[in-house]
Structure formats: structure tokens, C-alpha cells
Image (tube, rainbow, N blue to C red):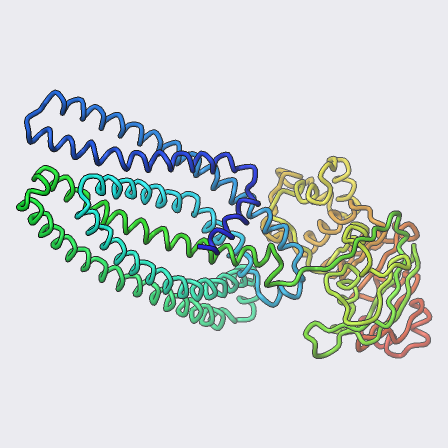
Length: 577
């Protein structure tokens, strides 16, 4: 109970503007109790009047029952509307809050746990939490109404009330035991469901690679094994539920037989009339079936609510996953100076990707990083954007340690154009609006022209309104990268990072993009990682990265003359051509 109250308080804080709907739910629940008390009394009175042939009073009593029933139906409607409005608002607020917190989680934790873990919590768990205010409220409402019936039975006959009360205690104990055991199994099911969701996500995102690698069967076998494990855990939970349900049903049948014996004894001793006995027996379903079923379902709903709340707020309250850390200092008018001072970094705490790396970049420079795959080039960009935190050393922007800066100072001043950009499943225009909300079509067209994509977009039937598919699936590799370049350039930040951004472009388009980059020289600080050395020959400086360190630097001409490793990289590229 304490855990549930604590979790409800957390949800209420998130759904503060919808509290008026919850107050309405509370008021309608009180009416349900009142109806639950009055209706059985008048029903018993109807039966007594009918058996005694007192028809005028019977009609009045029946009108009263009709009025109370209509009030109850209207009350139920109002409660349902209030519940749904509260639920919809709660889900919206929870998902926005959770989405906001998800974007703060360290990249390392997201990669380690898999996207399925977070998708489940953002969708299914928030739904389960909100169900507490629709399904759960319904169970509470019906339980309260049946509580009113309990009170009415107490007024009518205390012996039958004591019997029903004893039955309720026994059945409630069984339902509680079942609910506690079900909750433990449910945690296992949800963890396994996270694994399945992650694999399904990888199946969809990596379907092309699975086909081309002939890895479909191996992957499907792995997915099949995880689904089997999920089904086994789900079956165990279902089996437990069925076993307890059978036991409760058998006991209920025994209690009904015992109730009949009790009512016969009370009639023979003239404690109650036959009419009252019929009325009391009529409510056996409300007490032994409906009342206990609602309690059971309510307990399960509460358990689900608590489990889902703990999973959701583990993210919101930063209990399970580490969040990115930023300081509070803000830099205005960033010039674009960078410096790495003895920086070391590893992704898995084992092998160092960067090993005591140092270099300095001046504002307005165009600097390229070259080296073989795995040398640490892309890691440099990840650390500049503080996607990962360094293990030791110092990274400076305009002589300020990035660990002392706020997020806006770092990420609002850096544009990254990556090798594998993510294109959102929206129209071309909306992809630009994500970056700059009030961007005009004129600005979009200028950016597309700069990225050499304007002719392609103009050839499309719906032009800027064209939906381009999840991840840009309706575009070629070169078109996708050019769109990402255009989308990034509209940010007009002081610092632009090109991470293999021209790798998928043909020679002609690459030449056009290279001209666009050259046009930016001097005005922006430009850092380039390039597989093709021919694309970075005009850079002010080229830094050679080997084994996590800068081993040489200079212009293209200087490195060709003075560094054998760079010369070999360049010559191998010429041979490939």
C-alpha cells in the first residue's frame, strides 16, 4: 500500500493539470458507495412488499429503484469520461517526460541495454501506468459499490453479514497470495519481453545486412530462442493464475452451499423471512464473485502499476541508467578554437581507443583527420560533441573545459554531418523543420542547392512534401548523405564536423560538395574525417591518427614529402582508383 501511494504521488506530479478530472473520479466513487448501500435495501423491500401483496408501496419502491439505477448509470458515464481524460493526459505527460529523460541518458548505456528496453518503457509501461486510472478506477468503483452492499447486508442481518465477511477474508487472502506470486513472474516476463523487443528492432533496422550476410537463419534462431523463453515465462504466469482461480472457484461453490444451509437455519428459527432470505441470497454473486473478482483484478492492476512505475521512474529519477553530465557555464559567441590535452578514452574500459592524444585547432581552420579504420578518428568527433566522456585529460573549446560548459554551449555550436546520418520518416520539409522550426522554403532550397540535391527534389512529384521513409529508405546512399548535409548546413554553427560525409557520393557530386566545403573555409572551423584523401588535399592542416595518437601533421604536400605512412595511404588510394 505504501509503495502504491508513493507511486500515485509521482504520477500526480506529472499529471498536475489533470487533477480536476481525478477529483471528479473521487466524487463519483462516493456516489457509487451510496448507491451500493441504498439499492440493496430497496431491493429487499421490493421482495417483501411483493410477497405481502402490498402493490402501491411496491410501485413507489420500484420507482425509487429505477431512479437510483438511472443516477448510477449517469454517474458511471461521468466517471468513465473523467477516467479517460485523466488517462490520456497522464500517458501524454509521462511519455513526453520519459522521452525528455531518455535523451539525457549516456550513449554507452543505450548501446549496452538495447533500444527495446527503452521502447517498452516508453510505450507499454506508460500504458500500464495509465490503465490504473481507467481499468483500476473501474475495479475500485465496483468494489466500493459492493462495499455498499456489504453495509446493506449488515443492516438487514448481522449473521449473514458475518458469514460474508469471513468468506471475503479467506478469498482476499488467496487473491493477495496469487497477486504477489504473479507480480514476481511478471517482472521476469517484462525483462524477457525487453530482449525480444530489442531483437525485433535490430531485425527491422538491420534487415538489409542480414540478407546480404546470409545471416537470416542464425538471427531468426536467436530470436526464436528468446521468444520461446518469453513464452515459457508467460505460460508459467498463466498456469499460476489458472491454478489459483480453480482453487478460488471450488471454495466459492462450497461457500454458496454453506450459505444456503445458514439461510435455511435462520428461516426455521424465524430470524428472517423467506423474502429477506431470497434478497440476501441474491447478493451472493456480488459478494463472492463480483466483489472478489474486482479485488483480484484491482490487486493485479496495482501490481502492474507499481512494476511499470518503478521501470519508468528508474529513468526519470536517474536510478538505473546514468545520464549525460553537463555543467552550468555558458559560452556566448564561440570562436571555434579546439584543443585536446593528453586525452585518453576507451569504450569498454579495456583497450584504449585514444591514448594520451594532444592537438590544437584554431578558429576558422579547416583540419582533416586521416588514418586507417579503427585508429580513433570518429571517436574524436564523439568526444567533441560530448556524446561520450573522456577517461582522462582535457578537451577545450575556446580555452574552456567542456566539462565546465552547459549542453547548449557545446551542441548548439557544433554541426555534425555523419557517415550514416539518420533521416526521419517525415517529409523533406519536415526534416528541415526539426532542425530549424521557422525555416522558410527559400532557405531549404538554398541548402539543397548547396548540397547538390535541388534538381533531384524538384524532380519528385511532391517535391518538399515527399515522405522519404524511415532512415531515408526511399533515397540512395548519396541522396541520403546530401540531404543530411543540407539539413545540417542550415544550422549555420561556427563549427562543422564532416565525419566521412562524402563517402557515399559519386566523384561528380563529391566534387560539388567539396566546392561547397571550400566556400565555407575561413568563416567556419571545419573538421573533416575522410576516407578519400583526395577530398581533403586543400585542408589547412591534416592530422595523421595512428593507434589513438596524432603521429604527424602538416599540409597534404608536406605529409607526402615527410611521412611514409601518409604517403602509403595516399598511394594505396590511387591504386584503388
